[in-house]
Length: 109
Image (tube, rainbow, N blue to C red; front, side, top):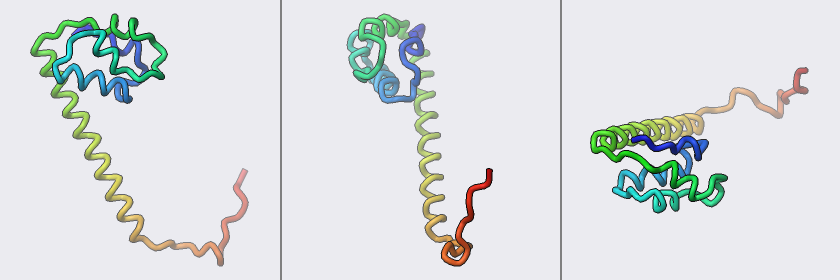
C-alpha cells in the first residue's frame, strides 16, 4: 500500500500500530485521521505520522492486510489458549521439593 508506518512506529503490534491498522481496515483513508489514532507517547509528530500514512489503497492490498491481521489475531488467540492451559496444568502439579526440609542454597557464581 506504500505506507511507511514502520518509519514512525517501532512496534506495529503495539497500541498505536494496531489502532491505525484497524482504522484502515474499517475504511478510514485520511492520513490525518489515521495519525490521530497514534498514542500520545509516540515520539513522531502527528504530521510526520500522517505523511507516512499516504498510501495506495488498492482493494487487493487491503484484502491481503485483512488476511494478515486475521492470521496474526489467530496466532495471538492460540498463544493465549496455550498460556491458559499451562496455568491450569501448573496449578494441578505438586511441588517435588519441600523448601522447609531442603532450602535452596546460595546462588552459584
